[in-house]
Image (cartoon, rainbow over all chains, first blue to last red):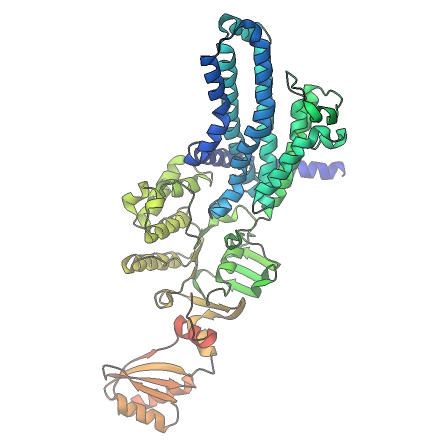
Length: 288
Length: 312
């Protein structure tokens, strides 16, 4: 591309109504948030997010917490984040939230109201993605903060010391970053799947299988996975057990920045393709 | 920007199923009625115009804009026949939210939403959840949403469905008023008798094919194989019928129920009128009124599309 063509493209981009698009995106996001977070249908996602908090709470109330046990509890919390939240909670929560954004509205036959508004379809998609992400992040991050607080609350002064003067806060930050990235990563994938398939659940189950067997795949294939990037960001390593440990392919350690950037690139690619798909999306409710 | 809705050789196939085939239209401002049986392609034409489905072939422009342009929806309002709404929403929220997506100031959106709700006479029910609305109220709130941003093109798919006679009359009055204001109002309705009164032109489609288009009276005159029926109000209907038969210009005559008029059917309407003038000039019969009795959309529909089932 010649410099003149580049300058022309830049001029065209600058002339686009970015201000209007931002206003529309913010308003759409607000409408979607109202529907995502404050609806009875979201109850099961609240349960999914807060079940570990309930269990940890019972554990904190019933069991004694000798200071020596703190390392074990730290490992348990890491296991909860990696094995429960990332593999199950965020995965299925995002499936529920993001597949509803487009496909759910097609099933409810209300998507045409958005498509008939003077909003570019790409803006609509990105606003819906933003709303889904904010909902998922709010739910799962607050659940993890509650888990973390409950896990160390039972240790009293030793727990406070671990959090504020030890590695506690750093670990919490890492868990929150992992959760945010997991919500964005799985969210983008499920949003795309919901546009590609009438019922995205079977495809989501394939993704689930892929994510589960990902550690035993060759390192190149491991890169096409949300979980593999997140594994590199875990502040506490949770080792694989049994036969799975034997099959696990140890990849080279990747720095946090590279893992984060890699996942963000993956999300950007998926969203770009989703934007392309929504441009040609047709309303044919009779076939839903 | 031109002021027409233009379809250029537009076809739409749903897989192997034909939606519409090679439709070419140029619709000027005013009220246009789409007439055709179930599955004839009326909704497909409306959905194509508004980008809800994309044409397999051909090109569509609405006042110079393509259906894929987001700006199109600043000038188009579409009241679909899908009787579904976003969950848990009130009538007011439904209209207000859609206005806010235009990017307008909140105060302006409030004013426009109130104006539209007032126009469809939904009143205080607007603050209630749509889930509790009757079918007629849902129809009204959809209509309010489609006119709230003061569009230049209003597309109405079966807008009279579910409305009681009073609300139907009010809606028709509203469409008439919008048409008079120079708007494009495109209506598909099976209540032809009522829509017919206000239509400037009619588009007849069946099986995805356009079979006639234009001013309703012109379309009727083009249906040569079906003799036209005229109602003549006069003091001696039997005498008039006999006279018309004697000069071989009538193929059928039927007395009006009140005995003060006669329905005459003729294959050559121009000749018929000149003969009628001649008879009136002779003074044998005193003619009070002459009116075409079958150049409405319903009759044209029956002649061109068939008699079974009726339009939808």
